[in-house]
Length: 327
Image (cartoon, rainbow, N blue to C red; front, top):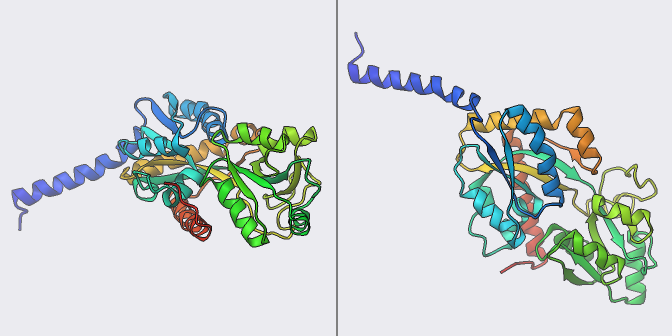
């Protein structure tokens, strides 16, 4: 029995679509790609993007433009990326704050990262340190807790803003340790936090190692513990949080690449494969290691997306337990 013309035409269209779907991803990119960055130049997320930019541009054979859209704790850039066309030409370099914490802490957020963006791959992890002002006599995390309990010292702790991961991490630590401090948020991030702890305006600070290491080496900031799984070779005498009696406290901040939701799966997989190949190159690993960043990528876009969803759930619980909400 012969196939009728309408059915035959339909089958031809289906076959044609299947044949064209893969080449559409293979031809990407055919023009410049934009990386939207949620902060001003100079921070860890911006550095990650600018380390990747020239190498992925060379790999793709087309320019990659870094577009910094600072403001509102990253939410301005987040909303711009989420509302962009899902064609691969607009990608978002986000992090634990923008893509995991902001969803539950900002009631004014007009988009939902878990729904409106999809993960491509994690890019890097960045070691962090618990530090204190040199005016504080403690030299360990346990020593700090004992000092506050014994003396009733009224200490301040700094963060990169209400709802930021340094804020949530410190609030979680203080609650577990059974002590209280006054929160002092700094919208300027490390650029304001570092002078504040050196000037004893705040006494306790959770900060990335890249920003704090130069001042630790000159003796102007005192490190108590590192969040890395092992001691860092740059600070061999500084114990890990596990060695300090507080395993699991403190985030090794991550930066990852995201695309607008709805991006075709073949294209998503193509971008994932290309970016991972570039990130895992010896040149990229060496370049990032100089700014204390470790390359951490995912086997698939789906694996990264599942990780992000788990992070959203985790940080939502921390925010709720500590009554942290940004209006």
